[in-house]
Image (cartoon, rainbow, N blue to C red; front, side):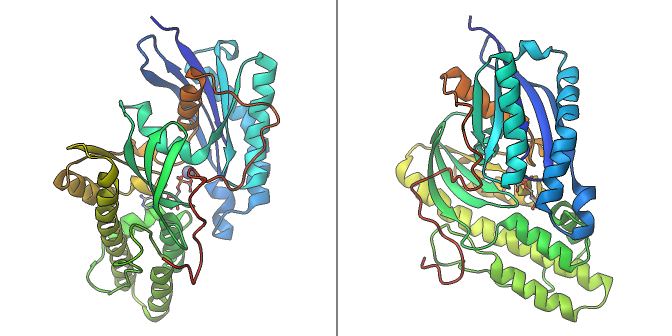
Length: 357
Ligand code: KG4
Ligand code: ZN
C-alpha cells in the first residue's frame, strides 16, 4: 500500500484566480477535494479583453481568500498538504508572479516541496483527474492562447505535430463574438448564438486547409468575419454569421485532426490510440461531437475533460504537481515565472504572416 498524497494547486496565469486540493488514494487514484475558480470576467468585460495590470491586482486581492475557501471546502488542514504546485508559465508575467510567489511562500512555511507547473501541461493532464490515461496519446490543446497538436509521450515529454501560425482558436471565437456584439468572453456565448443561425449562409475561408500538415491558421477567418460583420444588419444575419463561423471552425478542426491522426499513427502503430482534446475551447459541444465521431471512425479513443475542467482551473495544476511529486521532481524557490514556456522546447517558433509551412 502506498501512502496517500495531498497536493495544493494554484493557478493565476491569466484571468482566473484558482486554488484546488487533490488527493491520491492508496491505490493511486486521484480525486478532487476542492476546486475553487474565481473568474475576473466582470472586471475585464467593459474593456472587451484582459487588462494585465487589473488582472494582477485582482489576483493579489483574492488569492488568500480563494485559498482559504479551497482548504475549508476540502475538509483538510493546511498542514495535511504534502506539496504545493503553482503555475509558473506561460501567461502574463504580472499575473503568474502572484500565484507563483504565493505558492512558494506556502511551501516554505509548511517546509514541503514546491513544484512549478507549466499551465499547458495542466490542460494536457486534466483528464487524469477523472479517468485513467496512459501515455502515449495524441493531444489537441485548444484554448484562448494556444492551438496545438502534440504527441504526449510521458510527463514533460511532448512532441509538437502542429500549431497555429497566427491566432489561437479561442481568440478567434472571442474576436468574432466581439464583432457580433456578444459580451466578453465570447466563446461560450457565441456557441449559443450559433445554435440559432444557418451555418450555410456565409462562406468563410478555411486557411491552409490543404497545406502545412496539421498546422492551423485562423487569422484569415477572423478578417473575413470582420468584413461581413460590417455589411450585415439584422439579428438573423448575426446568428447566421455565428453559425457559419462555428461550422467553419468545426471543418478546420475535423480536417486537421485527420492529418494529425495520420502523423501520430506513423510513430504509434497500435490498433487503437488515445486522442485527448483539452483547453477552454474543448467545452464547445459541437466540437466535442464532431471530434468524437471522427475518433471513433478512425480508431482513436476520444477523451475530453468534463466541461468544468476544460477552462482554467487549479485542479489540473495540482494534477501535474502530483505526477511530479511521485517522482520527486521538485523545484527551487528561485524558479522564475516564464511568460513563454512551450511544451516542446525543440519545436521551431511559428507565428505570423510569411511563415513558411
Ligand atoms: O483554457 P482557457 O480557459 O484559457 C486559456 O488558457 O486560454 O480557454 C479560454 C478560451 C477563451 O477563448 C474562451 O472563449 C474559449 O476558451 N471557450 C470557448 C468555449 N468555452 C470557452 N470557445 C468556444 N466554445 C465554448 N463553449
Ligand atoms: Zn488555459
